[in-house]
Length: 140
Length: 140
Length: 140
Image 1 (tube, one colour):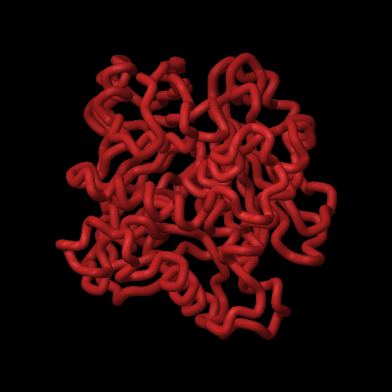
Image 2 (cartoon, chains in turn purple, brown, blue; image 1 turned 90 degrees about the vertical axis):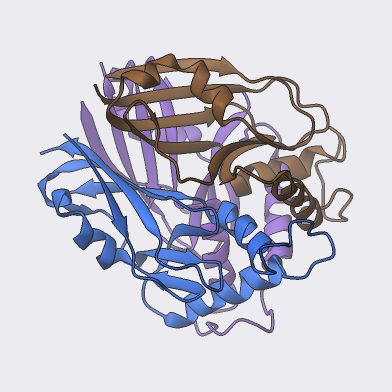
């Protein structure tokens, strides 16, 4: 059983945002799968997805701090600067975290660890609404 | 053909550990698949999985050195410090390396390159035994 | 429907290279799939794959600049140096970006965002021709 559905997330400010429930509710076909995999793919090159701690907002703020520190705007080695100082660091951050998550599915839900949640990682100052292409596959 | 099985790895000290055989032996259903994919997912946010060089232990030690250098404990920008100095860096490292591997399967085995092995990346000082959820899918 | 095919990319100099078309043309079975997933796996530990901006060559040059800056050759903490100064940084870079991409498939093509292209990330000075194992799965 295959399902594929494009969804649009609410626009978010630059930073790391917990979107587990927003994604889960956007793909109601998930509930039909007993065992399977969900592939969640972001259709952009300056935002990304990761799994991390779903409790403390401080963790998400520290993600922003570390990524801004490690991939600084205004570094002397950037050549691609014509789309703004936040653009090239956004591309690097997007590839460090990756464009997609493959999640195990069990009993109609994402089978994540207790503390795991899906982060939308918005690396641009004004990224707008981001689109995901979700592919579900499994047995009912 | 779908199989899903939760396994528990032996506890490891902080660092990078080769666990290819331990994972392969924990999912005997792998041997039934002629072509397929194995999704290996860690159910934690402060440990991760990667593929890298399966020969020299120096490579795994250098992984630890680089990650400790790039994501330092005690950096002035950490806000989430109440679970110990190793906690917040562990979350960042976990997302840099990622929570899951999807591995090609051929003739009943992981179809990896000659030098590729699965690393358990233990980012906490005392992480304990880590759980994986392995999802196998393919044709017999 | 499952297809698995090993392909060999043209050798590339150290750096980041757009190979979307080269991969797509090497797996003609892709055209048979209406909905599915393509798993593209590199069989090496010193080269990697990522998705990023498919237009400006400056973006790919800036990837090389940032990765060389973040994972420097000759750092005092490297122990594994006997395969040359580019070897150990190549292993770290390969794990930061990852050994595989899972791509959504729709209507016989990779269903990527407008600006997304597949990068071969060649982290060695003389990496030679790199091999990929591509696994396609979906419904016709």
